[in-house]
Amino acid sequence: MLALLCLAGIAHAAAPERRIALTIDDLPWQRLDERAEPELAAWHARLIAALKRADVPVVGFVNEVKLEVDGQVQPARVQMLRDWRDAGFELGNHTFGHVDLHAIGLAAYEQDILRGETTLRPLLAETGQAPRWFRHPYLRAGQSPHERAALGEFLQQHGYRVAPVTVDNSEWIWAFAYDHVRDTDTDPVSREARLRQLRRGYVPYMLKKLDYYEQQGQQLLGRLPAQVWLIHANALSAGCVEELVAATRRRGYRFISLEAALQDPAYQHPDGYNGAGGISWIQRWAMAENKPKAFYAGEPPVPAWVMTLAGLEGE
Image 1 (cartoon, rainbow, N blue to C red):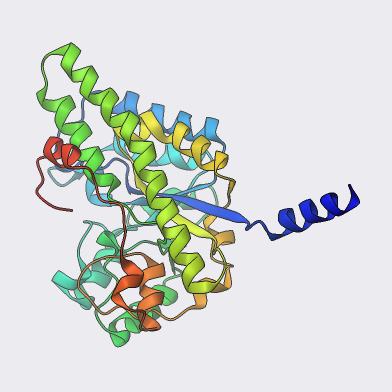
Image 2 (cartoon, rainbow, N blue to C red; image 1 turned 90 degrees about the vertical axis):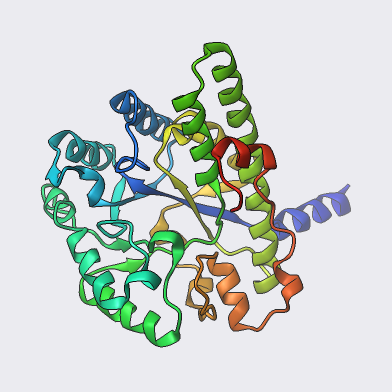
């Protein structure tokens, strides 16, 4: 019996510690500058209430262009950010216009970052805070070590730290599909059936992505790093985030703050990615070590039926 207890203790001690930080992009609401959002106030309130019930730390990243209609800042949309702040969630900068560094160049990108704190900085100052996190739109962070270093120096000068992402995903495609069904299906029965199908498929997809990046982190580092997860502020998240958090906890994960996650030494690893796209930081670290192509294989795709509902041909 003593031997069995000792073996159980060893197994428990060897179990990896699973930690993850939740971040939410495109505040106050994804695609708010592109489409009318039916019942926006209700969806917004539902998302914040779900996150509070889930009891997780969150950093939300703001695109101030979404605060405007015809160039005029809308007080109701600023209030949405104040709701996030007053719920105890932190707010960061995601550039003003959700711009692509690789498309507009570093100088214009830096100006868009500063423009993206026009409302955010005074709003946070109301409660003695200041923006300290920056998230690259599209996760496009620079196509050379020099460009990344120059941007890093600029961000540091303005009090920002980069918020990397290790658990990347195409959650935005699921959200596009969800919006498309909401916008176009006029039959209440088929509409709800499709929405339910998307909600049921979404959490398993996200967990498959989590498993994939957990495996990659373990393979690269020999241990599990503290992960950083990316989702967006949208109706799909409002309907599913509680189950996503609960299912992740059932996997043994503990939700921690972004600041705590970045204390993991993994985030000191060099970034070896000089491509044009946006990818997980785990894969960037792997590229710095010249991992073979096989290392990146096996990432779960978005199912074809979701792509069809979203009206997209590829991720």
